[in-house]
Every structure is written in structure tokens, then in C-alpha cells.
Length: 451
Image (tube, rainbow, N blue to C red; front, side, top):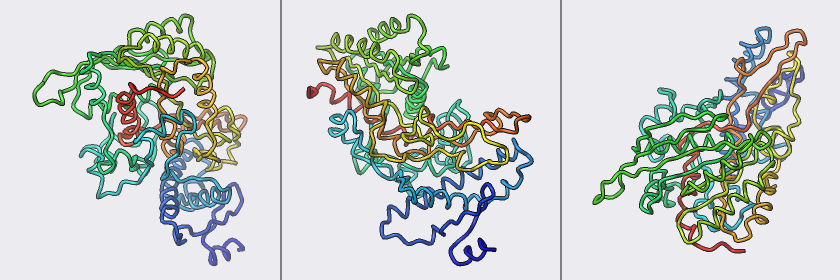
């Protein structure tokens, strides 16, 4: 009765785990700041779509919890946004998050000066192809389409998250170069080998690279990748950008996995030989720990020093930002219970979360930045400040996997929930600034770095 009376006066109530929660009628609040208002509306739409998807998975895994299928996704979304605002958490993705580590590269970058912005229906054709727009509307699906999936990771998000684009990549701001432009940058300089070395996040970047190439009319002769085994060379042919020279641009792209504590014997030797063979190398390590990172950076520094006098380049890639419910978003500091009672299913446990403090530097990148300065004493390794693009994107990880990921212990009456707040769903606009920043770094890599 109390909840009903308050609901009539204020907004609405929802019962979660037996507790009545009051949620202001957020969509009726007028805010003097248009950005904050649009952030609220966006977050509510994203969370509503996520919870709508999750509750159907709960109904499949836990048929006895039918009441969850009756709960209002909109009510939960309003409550979650209200809870974040009460805690002072900045959940708005429509803001640039400058990269505090590797700051010189970020400050000198036009691409880095942008921020995420929502692309309206009227503007979709500036950012997406006709087929991609159909995917956004749920009419088609497939690899390299923004259909809300994360390639072979079993994740899915609503379409709202896929409508965001990085402002520096807009036509008005000068745009972002594509991977086809990177290929032509390489081939006009007699280069043919691009190396990507890292964990499964680097593999996801490889997937975005291949999708960008296909999107731009390039042909990939060989492809196929499995994280644990590495990849064969991806043989790529791209049409010429020149009206007078129609020679196809031809490069090989290779992925080499590195998993920190899970390194195999001889893996450093393998990285050394791959670095030596590569014309352009991009290396990252972080999500699996710092084990043998110093060894990897020493190999990179040796190769970068050997490359002096040539246009061959070695880059260190910043680690992306995860959004587990923890102080810094990392899995290692995750504080939520790993197993929950069937009768205590809480929607907030099945969502990735915005960072509690986005002004803090991500610890993995801070450690890598310090180590890089110690190892690369000649300052020949360029760093790619990729972290800024994922820092505010808690909305790009996907939903609770449901039956595909749940390990049910019927005897103990507990549910082993596994949220993946690390891997990212695919969208060409999400990865456009990554690729644009890479091209920008190639163009500027001949300029000396400050000590």
C-alpha cells in the first residue's frame, strides 16, 4: 500500500528481491543540461533492452522464476540509472575520456580529441552502408555487420549501443582513415607485413581490421583464427586509391597470441622472429597479467632500434577498459558474488557497469607505461592510446549469456552467473577511431618523441 501511494505521488515502484524500490519518473525530469538529459534517456533505453533480453534467459534457465518475466524492464532501467546518479557515477558515454597514460600521443592527436555521439536515423547513411543499416534495424545479421553480436563470443546487445560514433571521424571533423588507407600507406612504402600480437582483445581488433578491409572492397584470400592456436597469415588484396596506378595493394596480416601467465615455452623467441619479419607491429598485453611483459617490451625495443633509418614501425597498444562491477572495472577487483541463490536473482548482477571514477588511470596501462619508459630508453616505440575509446563504453559488452554460460547446481540451488564485461560487440563506428588513430600514428611516426 505504501509503495502504491508513493508511486502515485512520485513515479513507480518495482520489487527486486522482495524489496520495494522507488524510482523517479526520470523521463519526465527536465534537465538544464541537454547532454545529461540525453545521457539519461540513452542509458534507460540500453538497460531496458538488456534486461528485456536477460529476463527471457532467466525464464529459460530457471522456469520457477516466472515472476521475472513479468517485471518491467523500463522500471528496472530507471531504478538502475537513479542508483548510479545517487552514487555519483558518470554513466554518460557521450564524453571524451582523455588517455592519462601515454599522454603526449593523445594530446597531439586530432582523433583523440573527439567524443562519442549518438547517430540519429537521419544521419545513419553518413556512417553506415545500406546493409549495415538493415542490420541495425534487425532485418539482416552476419559477421562484419552491426547486428548486436560479438563474433564468436556469445554476447548480444540492443541496437542502441551501436548507434554511437566518434565525433573526430565525422566528415565535418575531417573523418577517420580506413584499413584500406593503412594498406596503401604500407604498399606505397614497399611494406607487406602487419603483425598484431596480444590477447583475445587484440584478436577482436584483428576481426575489426578484416571487417574494415572487406567493407572497403578488399579481398581476403586466407582467414580463420582461433585464440589458443594463433592464426595463419591473412592475405589481403585492396583496390588502388590512385586513378593512374591500378596495381592491387597486397599485404599479409598475422595475429600472434600472448596470454601472460599462460605463455608457452619458446613464445618469446616466436615473438622475436615475428617482430623481425613485420614491417608494422602492434603489440599488447595486460588483461592476463603483467607476467613477461618486460621481456616482450625488450624485444620490441630491440626491433624498434634496429628499424632506425627505415619506415618500419613498432607500436605498443594500450589495454582496453573492462566494466566489471568493481572499483576499476577489472576482473581482478570484481566484488559481486560469483554464485547467487536461485531466489536472489538481481538484475544489477547481470549488467556491466560504468566506472565508478573515470578520472582514474587504468592500473594495467599505468604499469605498462612506466615499464615502457624504463625499457625503451631511446623512445623508438610509439604507443597507441586506444583506452580512451572503450573507457566510457560499458554498453558495448553484451548481456548475460543465459543457458549457454550458466552452470547450474540444482542440489545447492545456486546459479553460477558469468558476465563478460571485457569483450566487445562489433560495430564499424566503434572501431573507426581505433583504425583512424593507427593511420594517424603511421603518418606522424617520423616525428621525434619527447624524452
